[in-house]
Image (tube, rainbow, N blue to C red; front, side, top):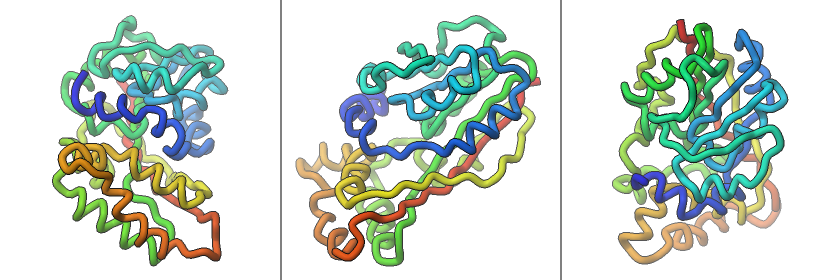
Length: 249
């Protein structure tokens, strides 16, 4: 297991509890662009946040991750078959999939070996779609604090690949005919404790904590609490989604 898998394995339960869910409109759009709807794969599925949306559209849904902790956190999702495997080496037949999705994970392994495996797995005309989200937006008081935490406090602690998220995946080249996607965003209504729980799922937070022996989120909480205020216990949180979508010839 590589370092990234270890980081997500260590806090798999928190990841399942605090990471936001993807909008239904995204999966409606993906389904409309699939030629067939027999088999779909959620690759690097984590705890199955994208997987759970797919059985509505596909006869069989597979979900794979290198982290056993993440797979255990997924539990049982009706219509989804989970298994452990690396992104670049899947135990599936050639040309056996109509759709492959990668949700908030492509930046950890986007290279020639991965895309060769995707090309092997997809049927001709099969659809590949990866998406990511970076910093959330809440309001003019909280956003600067979170931005400074992300870009300054954690600057040197993000694993290699995170820059692709900041670039909205525009720096990743795929060997498929690209499809332009409409604008999608994640929206959630959170209490304050959900915000701090989410921040603790960041891989850079875990690396910072391991080096310094203390929790950087706890040190930020007084400023966040003051900016959050007492008047609105629940806040709207929003993340724009960035999609990389293509069709295998």
